[in-house]
Image 1 (cartoon, rainbow, N blue to C red):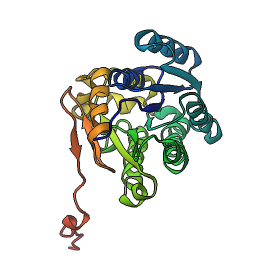
Image 2: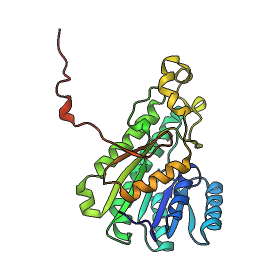
Image 3: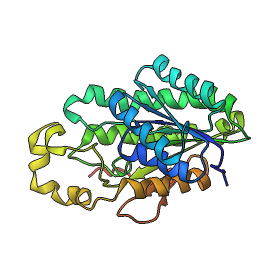
Length: 271
């Protein structure tokens, strides 16, 4: 088990929603300190004020961060180490849903996550963790394991995060760095992320009756607090490179892709 007590975390997209709930739940589990990393200064400062009031002065700091800019992202790591003298957990949580502005969506969701993994795995968690092990937890989505025709670009970015988790979660990387890489895949959750009608690529993606069953899961939303509680369990107990689904306010379960060899009988047959 990875012990959270007295560890230090950096949480991207930590000013609200699931990210802020991650911070609270980690602090409830004995975290020494947390850096709230977010592009929104007002929300970030409010989050830190709230955390320090609830958990004690000096428990949280805010660093304005554009995760798409590697140098800017690195500054958040540097400040974390300067203040808390270590960094043991990276919550790669910053993400947006906006298929209409898909270029930005790809930048934040994919480039931002890559930046975090490279900085954490190869430098900061590797060098500044307190013990033998550190953890990167990526916030993916059930949209990254189940294709969704109504949000194809967002879903594709989450598929990318699932792939990153498995690639960087290989034993080769853990043996070099001592950093586990895992992912949480939340289902529908009450967060500021989704405004589907405004951010769908085309209106017909949202209005099509043929896609209604596919979208039904979003209506059964869980609380971000519940996702955070399950995520802390994942941080503590999940094996390197694993994917964990949290949906319908039910306990997290591991999602395992079938072995490639099992598909050998699915071949094109010419007629």
